[in-house]
Image (cartoon, rainbow, N blue to C red; front, side):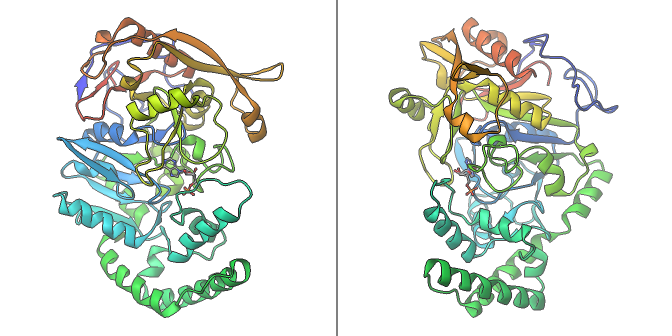
Length: 459
Ligand code: IMP
């Protein structure tokens, strides 16, 4: 990780935070470092949050996942080794950090224990360091089966990861879900599981003509998981409250991205949780006043996995080029990601919804050889010009992007470690992004290696 001395990219963009003025807040240069930071995806997920979190972890003591489940995939390259995190906070690659899987997460105990084992086998001390909230909901095999069946029965596919995420959140909201605390309490668990298995079996046979799940088998298997999970289980809210009282610094790791948020994303082509910064409070049990900083992560272009409108999606040829150069294949499912130009309308919406203080721009190097680079600055619907991200999914599907064209920089950015060392056209591109999303850039990543990133402007 390298640090840039550049103090200003875009003076207008570097204005103080307006929407959440705080007495303890500090400017980007000087002053006390912010204590509790939320890192959130400001596009459709896969923005490179793992890398940004890895860089910011040096300023944190406790890493918190607050939503989603093992549908997420955060890739971190450290010391020449690649690690992919799904459920476990990715900042745990650093020594002496503690990770919490918050109440807003849905946890598949089998996937969790496997991930724990995989990381431990690679020398990462995760056993002692990983805590799980007793209020997190548990994913069962019937959730996964229903996810796949519902997906194939839907007239318009969502393209879910098939991990049972949506059906588990359905049970949570329907108030029939099983939480980690229930799982670890033998009697309660047996009773709740029986009720759930009976209901799901009825659903499976009547709606889908599918074979039933065995209650006894699930009870035995999950009782086994509960024993292995128990040493990690804590009251998440209390754990964080006590940590904050001792002055510990929290880093909240958003999974997925703003446009996959159940409320603020491109519904129904979204995941089933609040991936936005507000989700950090409800999904971890901390008050909004505890959050000092929100950093939005964007790629220098845009990608999405799964179905749904994508106004700036590339044509086939460019898609292949960028997908190959950017290694745009899902870290969880291996699916090829859809790629497109940077959409400033979408990113500005994300910056506002999350209250981002700054953005981190990743994968700048992927655009190094482009002749011309386009930025979407608005949409056209017939004769109408749209400057605000629409909530009407039909409109978004019809919308044609309005592009601004900038010349490419034809220079490698992978070895650059200061903003001023970037080619003038690369600087111009980044300044334009800043002006369009209306917050400063705090970090630029130019490759997958840990050291291929530099901070900007004293952040
Ligand atoms: P689900 O979260 O498995 O229900 O999938 C819902 C939508 O979110 C699908 O379009 C998935 O491709 C997308 N999705 C879920 N997790 C991720 C992620 O970590 N990165 C990118 N897309 C994701």
